[in-house]
Image (cartoon, rainbow, N blue to C red; front, side, top):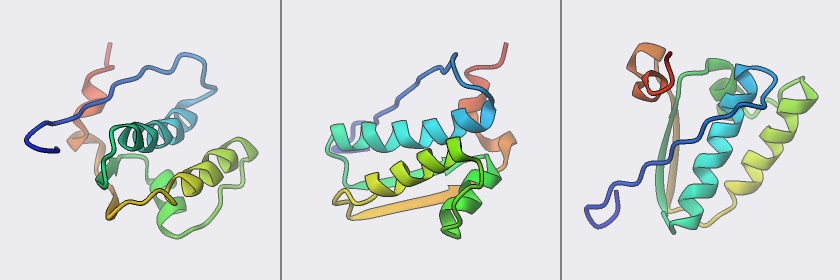
Length: 102
């Protein structure tokens, strides 16, 4: 939310090999979107514990595909954020998942 404007970004991934790739891509897309909008304070929530653990503990993923996302994620965090928070949330509290349930 900036100046009482709430920004939302929704994207569907149809070419990913598995859901883990989509989880990594969603984090990247969120950071890129916030930077395009000039957002300096960002709170990121994600329900994929392996992804969040990798980021919070700074432990690179063993899978080469995910490693590229991991490296790019950290490259994007060099943006001049005033504050960037990342936390895990239980899947049942992730309203974004409900948008794509068929």
